[in-house]
Image (cartoon, helix red, strand yellow):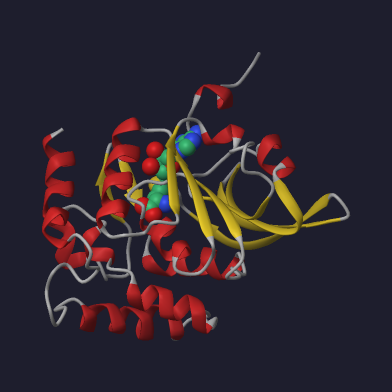
Length: 238
Ligand code: SAH
């Protein structure tokens, strides 16, 4: 609980502002360097995605003790044994979703809310589900304080998706699942994209699927390492 409060309290001073209350944003230089060296220099080329990554204050989504490392090229702990992905992975998954301004996107695994905030600058609405009540509550508070009004956070098991809002133009899963949950496949709109890390025998792979004529076709993107998707529904049945 102390860690949760520590993560949330600094945001109270910056309601209505996304630069941490610092008029000249001392974090902007590090953020721009991150965009240039970790994203543009690799294969992130969608100008809207690059702009979003250059805007969202990632240092406000990590615990205060990790703030100085917020724009480094690696994942960071966010409490409750979970991690915020490396900036490149967030950008890559966002680019693979091909986000359009009119899109409605579902995210499974809210975590800190950072990926949701990046998406929120690119699409109409983001619906995001987090299994941990503690993380869901702190992410919702953080996103509200930073005025990301088009992000809707719910705590629960993302395996089931968000049927009331479906279908979605894009679905992004930020925890590794043993398979694509059937409800998520069903909640993807025709022409929609799903980006999800899958557990394999010897590691994990990030895949992207596109739904055409009611059927999703998947392609391998990269070998990755995500925290595992948890929840009652994923427990093996024997
Ligand atoms: N996207 C996050 C990082 C996610 S880490 C960010 O930008 O910070 C993966 C998250 O998935 C963890 O917070 C974990 O609690 C959550 N998670 C794991 N299994 C889940 C499930 N079945 N439903 C919803 N969330 C889940």
